[in-house]
Image (cartoon, rainbow, N blue to C red):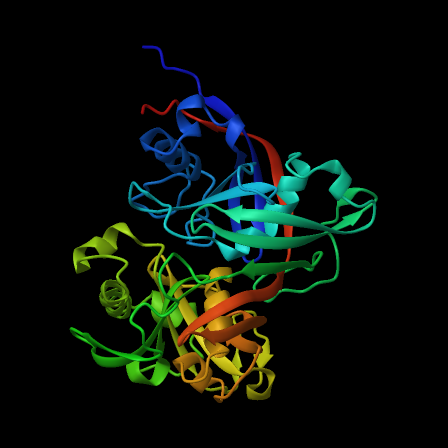
Length: 392
């Protein structure tokens, strides 16, 4: 009995922020996968090693966490005044689907470097030494992101002394600006309120700030759900009942935000919205053993991604945190002490992160002009990824 040989597709495996993913140029994908649809999804699932009932992704490039089950497709931008179009696919670990509903802020840090290395940025815009400004069109949410990539001797600089909690080794700093970060075409606060009351079966009535900025996010108070805000992954990810409660909160919040029409639809939209809980500062020890003092941060935040507590913080959720913190009266702002602010440093399971944001009211509605943070990125491996033939 004969079997068809594996196909090989040019690819680059990159770390961006606290995430890893497989990066492709659109033109390098098999012809059937160059357009959205089943063929593309099946290819990416097989590349990552999903669906995997063992939830290990042994037979693929995924790392069996939401932070490492990711794919990126880049192409020369068709949008005016942009260099590259960036499409992000969050690959489910144990289910056969790819979620295209949102961005990955962490991998955004790697998009600029990949775009430069792939020839998507005009050579006359790349300095011999200094910063190259890469104008990114984020195709999932149709927003502009600007990455400032360090260049040394005409090449992308990946090494450096910038330290990012959640990443073991230092690297070069990449500053990222999320322009007009409200996600989607609707209002930044889809219910019209800075704080709503969510009545969640099995949980009760919760105060919640639901915001579309960076990525749709539902914020609740840690104390309202029995937590302190200092929890690490093992405190939640090993508790099936807790995870089920968070998923119920996420589903009811998604309906309230207008992202889905029924609770049942949440199962097919795992990437968005995110759910997070906030608390006032207090001392804790991070997952690396680093002591975080209450005075080091403005507030504490823990967020879930793809049904599990994230080991650090999603970049897009950090945008939501920074934006909500800049608006007096949100739960995030109140946990940080209230009042007006244009930057916040928050504690997460791996350490701390600072994010800046600018927000203002226009005709009675809040809007954000930009959010800013620094990440790092580097190439881990490049060449070809091999997969068995995928039938469309």
